[in-house]
Image 1 (cartoon, rainbow, N blue to C red):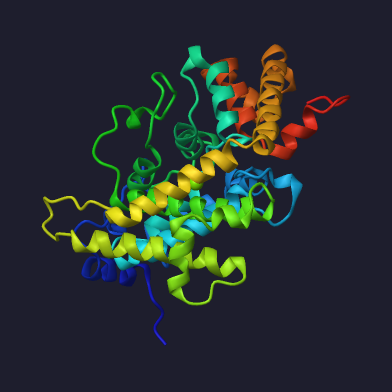
Image 2 (cartoon, rainbow, N blue to C red):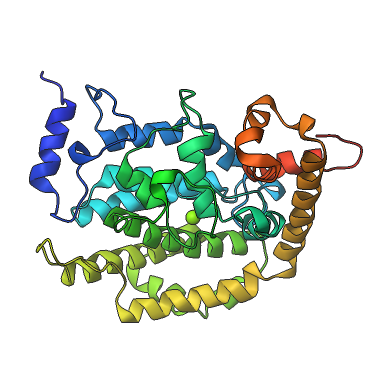
Length: 364
Ligand code: MG
């Protein structure tokens, strides 16, 4: 049997994908590399993300319910895997590049510090005068610099569409990105938009699931949501996992159908990805519910506020005594300065590592 070579996969992309899709054959890296015999450039990007230390750490970073109170809640790693499989399906349905969408999805949360958005705010304040902190910008810094694959300051040396995709949302003025990203040339690829929308579908449905399992709110409260009720039209919805999966199905189907209906293959018309008006209303209602009953619940805020205090403690400790930093971090002091290096180091920590080094009687 003749095996499928990289060139065959690249040919298939040329013939089968939309004019709006990214093609691996065209994707450049900061440093050129000889092509892989089996994998396309985006498949290699995906594999580099999966093999990175930052990806492994997602296993012990909080999504919403602090991962240490139970073993079956989402961590950032399981969330990223869920987004990746959803993004592959949606990208494939829209004839976009599923490999690129998968790689972006696996990397989309790499820059999150411990304790989620509260941790992000704490770091942003601590380094406000040195370029601030945002998880998206940090994700870009991780793949471009901190994950030092071959010691040449090129990080994972990912393709340009992948790097461009990771750079989205607010970037604080003065945040130290790779030089070639400053000024944000061009649009992010549409595959990045697929990941954004799948990220939202994943966390809306899975946070509802986790919140119910954790007992933060009751099933009868969730039953008032219209998306919850809409799941009844999609067959069996018991036990809870089947209802959650039906809700995801409604959102994913609507995203693909609504986007495809407005799609043009004229290369000068950039397609708009999104939900229909009626399903947008259902998703917004669920988000408002989660904000009020879950993200801002006392149970979640207590854990997060404690985490935020620990981030400040750890940052102050490394800043006061840089000798406590590991050698790889100390090596960046001259170039980046102690504030940025301490910030990178604390941001990279898992929730449980931060807990350990800031608990009474322990030292970093
Ligand atoms: Mg996410």
